[in-house]
Image (cartoon, rainbow, N blue to C red; front, side, top):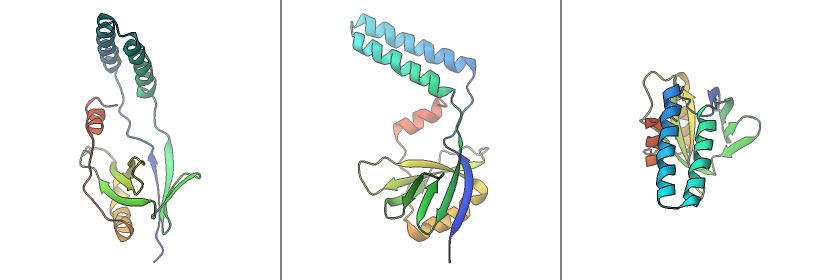
Length: 157
């Protein structure tokens, strides 16, 4: 049976940020800068400024909608990226998904060790169909979320 499942989803989960989110970010950065000056570590101070600039610019970025296709060959994202099942080791669903979200998060693990995991959003109404199709090709494992994944959700980045 030929599997062809298409869906559209944002490239990452977006959390709207209030002005207080930006104020807190700047306040924490200022604390790090004071610490860097006190320690006379100006390289660290430079790093803090660069990091805060990136956080402020990425924090306001809204995700683009991507087209996904899951077929017999593997997963295709938009017109340019594709991953065959031979590259993928396993998949997992995260348990940190908010109930009110219209998406479920799936994590794909690659066979190559230097390749990081990839997280994709899948519409809840397509989840069962996608999970069934993936289960025929890849083993399902427990999600291993990192401390950075948890921190990202806590600070809603």
